[in-house]
Length: 460
Image 1 (cartoon, helix red, strand yellow):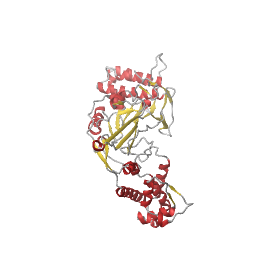
Image 2 (spheres, rainbow, N blue to C red; image 1 turned 120 degrees about the vertical axis):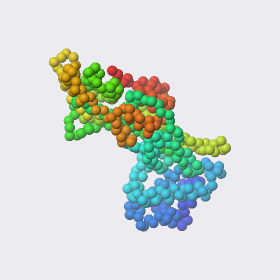
Image 3 (cartoon, rainbow, N blue to C red; image 1 turned 60 degrees about the horizontal axis):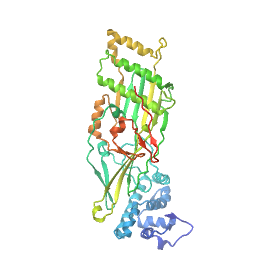
Image 4 (cartoon, one colour; image 1 turned 90 degrees about the vertical axis):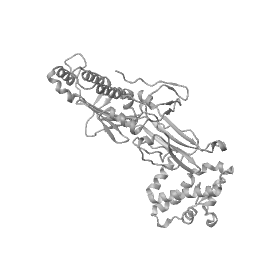
């Protein structure tokens, strides 16, 4: 489809939308000038171009060309040539599609049209925003897929169980049964999609938020999914520009947290054992983040880093064949596709530990004083404020909890189990439970047969 002002055909002879459609069906090149496109808009699509805003009116012919070119019904040409598709019904579907898109454009105005043109020129590069919540398909899906978006705001348990089917030219939204819940541990929890955790103590505060990116779209034909490319470190940001930053080595932070946890595990501490385990897992995962980032084995305070945890990406592809498959032998499918990129946003809010230089060992002044205080029964009352504040977040539902068991119950009741996903390197399927337990890392073979082994995570 192209516009050509150098040759102006007879308008009355060539202004029919049906003639244009027929020529394209016959795979002929069609040249349409602005006047012809305006006549189509005015007389056949009943668009009052003169009543529109001048900017929108001027761009309307070009938008018509865009909609004609991107109509998904062109993919059914084989059915037409084989005699299975009626020309009149096929054209009416085409006309209805154009009318709906034009009405949407008129309602949303010139700026929307400009954005559509920009997106079309990008050739469908998917949105890289990691804060997308609940959008079932992305308008910027790769070309060859549906040239429209479907935005579905729904509970998380529904979002993870949606599938799409087709009936003639219609798309049918269905929901398959929930995947049975599998009990998960603390390590899986803190690496689970949509889960965040915040750790606050007098001298150390940090946050970890799962910002995994879901790129969802509908595939109108059977074709392979193209995995998204992603940088290992996506961005590094200062949390509060008005405050300073200080850089600390991983060894220093390990030494501090080791001493801190030794005090927390002391017999004087009266907190429940589960709380100790929660602290230890959260701290270990934070230190593993710093080790995996490998920024000279350091981390700066007042700093947030978003990275591709595990250095992997995954796919889901749900396809439902038409019920006519066993009758006709043709397998026409609508694919519901997901590209999944595990991402972690890790932040060191502050670290105020000061080494105690009066000893040969690497210890810290505040922790030494705290340890001596706790050994004195009279100082045991001070243990309440030494216990860190831990907050769990569900970023999808915008909820927070102070107990791990409460957010686990929320996941089980409101989110349900995530479906299995496939590694883009080895093309094998994995459960979310198994991947979160190993920080989204696994040993696999690349497409070239190269053996890939991820770096080891931090262990106490």
